[in-house]
Each structure stands twice: as structure tokens, then as C-alpha cells.
Image (cartoon, rainbow, N blue to C red; front, top):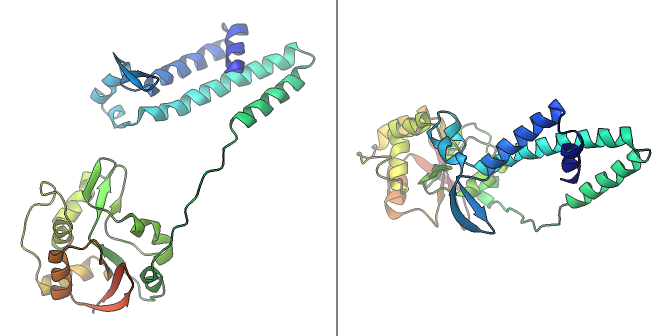
Length: 264
């Protein structure tokens, strides 16, 4: 900030300085959001970002705070201009620049923070050891995006995917395209799993559950070779359908999950 202020003071007529000042100011106002907040209090002052939601394409930028990245870039360019000016005008410019750089590095030094080890249940490792290819369906089937879950999602399944290293049904995507949701709705087996997993009714309407023959055909069509059942979160209706209808055999079990292989 000191270097940027120095650049504005000494070279405010320079075209480069003026350009980056305008860029930084624009994105700074954008980053403030739709209303001005001060010391944790909403002043109710409406800002230009409120209008963004009405602009095509730009309206997809739902997190205005990310605009601060461009503000940092503008400050860096203004600071670089000031550094160049100091080295030209001062005999001790190089020393001053070194001191300022040291101060900036000290300011950005991250404080240590606590980390948590992620442990994956034995069934994930048992799935890793299986040699035949195919995706795994973890039930209840979870699906969601940045707007919320369509069906409750088991985040452990995503965290442990580097262990079992297979494609998985469901998951999370910040911007979930409607076409993906439509694929799940149009797949009778996946749609049934979503309904039995607690999906919102307006997303996945009611329909008859696939019988054993139809479910078997759909499992093979979808390339699903394994099912993993979360014993702690699976409802009675989903459990009865999986164990009573689907062509599966148990191959591993632990305190949380039961792993099944889809029969040929």
C-alpha cells in the first residue's frame, strides 16, 4: 500500500499508473459486494455489484470477494512502478527496495494452522485391491453443487477417492450443469437411488423402482461394478431395495461401509 501510494503521488500522470489505478478501483468496488459493510455491520448502502445479477454471463460470478485478486494484481503493478522510480531517483534505492520487500514478506508469512489427517475405512482399501474395472456407486447416492445438495452427500467418498481410484456415482461440482442432473433423472436406476437417498421431490419425481432384471441391465449399461452401502446413513427403504433386488454379493465390511460386487 505504501509503494502504491508513492507511485500515485509521484507518477499520477503516467498512463500505466492511471490504468492500473482504474483497474484496481473498479475491482475493489466489485469486491465490496452488493451492500457496503463496515466493521461487520451492513450499512444498507447499495453498491454497483447489485446490478451484476442482471447481466448475462457476468451474473454467474456469485462470489464478489474473489475480485480482490485483481486488486492485488493492480497494487503489485503500482508497487513495481514505485520500486522502479525509487531505484532511478535514489542512491540508496536498492537498499530501500530490499527493506520494503522484506517487510512485505514478513507481512505475508502464514501462521501455522492445525491440520487433520483423513483416515479411509478398510472397505476403501479393499476396493482398491480389486482388479476388475468398473465404477463404484456409494449409497445413499449424494449429488450437489454450490447451491446446495440435491441429495445428501457423503464427503468421505470424495476424500478417499485417491485410495480406491475409481469413477464414482454422484459427487459435488460448484456449477452443476442442468444436463448432468437430467442424465441422473433419465437413468431409472440412478433416479431411484436419488429418491431413496432423500433427493428433493421437485428434482427427482416419484416413479416405480426398477425390478431386478431392469436394474441389472442398467448397472451394466452404467459401468457400475461395485456398490458401497453406508450402514449409518442408509434408510430402511433403500437398504431393502439394494439387498432384496440388486444382483450383488458382499465382499468386504467394516463399521461404516459394506462393499458389494455386482454379479455378471
